Image 1 (cartoon, rainbow, N blue to C red):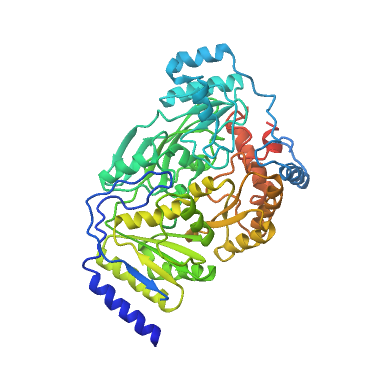
Image 2 (image 1 turned 90 degrees about the horizontal axis):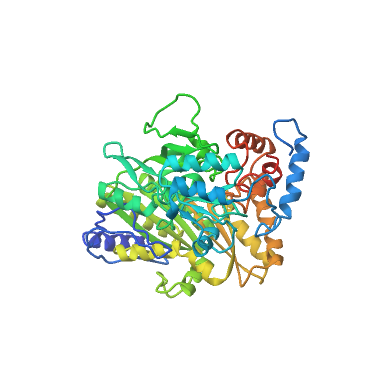
Length: 563
């Protein structure tokens, strides 16, 4: 009875404030602040309102093989696979660059787009975490599909290995060379080709930066169905090639659903025009899906058509505290039932994640001072009826407080506060980088099991490192991170293969959204059967018989080296 009275008083209080608490968001359908220091553009200044606070309240695969031997051979190799891929050897099948090669590329691209400057090559050779570094001597910058085609046709004839590159924001070593592969960066292909306001279908080139597309669509009254912390640098071609997930997947689904068509260039220079803009097309095999998530190993994506949702005016963000992970799970269930179609994000982070952000990022404050809680949840709702959406969210929050799922919480009172909440969640990767060495794992797991792995790994590592858990709880994606003063093989030996074995045992995926790249190419059998990998290798052999596209990535090396 006492809880009901407290909730009733709070409901009356919040109702009185409803007229003043307005997020008059006529900008874009998100108010996130990028962890990389990039902010979104907002519309008119919104009227502030009082915060709503809750207290208490194997051989070539063309031939038959012994599949068990195939699996065992690969497992032996990947278990000794080092953190920085020390065991990978350059394929003797690939040629090395010659002066004639350079001359050819200068003829088709012009001298300014054939980069051999050491300083620029250092950047292109190194991933943004500084963990993977290649030794390429050549960066090519095509400005059209035709030029990409000419590059690949020539490289294929010469057996010059190629690494497709966009914004180079990947986390698994997929977008940088392993050895001396030629880097083909599509950043100059950054034109918006067409936009249909009736259907919301956008057609653009692969080099368009995600944040630029967000800004363009905002002016048209639409949004991108994809939202990432690296939006200021990542490019749509790379997003599609890695099937990037991000913060909106719980609402808009994956790129397999949003991408209607694409154009890709095969290893031999042939251009596959699959740039359809139809939502329904059942004529034969839907080949675009082979390139979504293939990480540039089957072809280079050059154009994309994508279905974009309309921008909605009502956006609310709440930052909540939960006493345990079980409460986070139950809160997710309640959110799906009670918020339904307006739920656009459901993120979680543990106490260690928030501590990292507070200690390593300037200007970040704890939204729920003075105490720290075991878990935090960020909920975003997006809808078209501001009054109804706010009532719905407030009723959900009050109900969740009544039944003890929320220990504390605050509803954003203005755009700045909403952005600060998002900055905490999106700032975790940056804080981890500033804290020292970090071992990153991107896993899909049953929601009820997700945090068990974090707790068990903490026991296994003891005081040698910090284990941090956060991620997209709404779609079962755990970002498991191990933070240490420096990289240490002894720490790695305790993490791997333990993390992969645990994930496989619980029927999860070792890559939820980051891809396999170089880091996890040899770990694929933890998530895929030998038969499935054989089919993948056959497709690779068909589309790229010389294996020049992004070698040493995606497929296990005992398979890809057979090419």
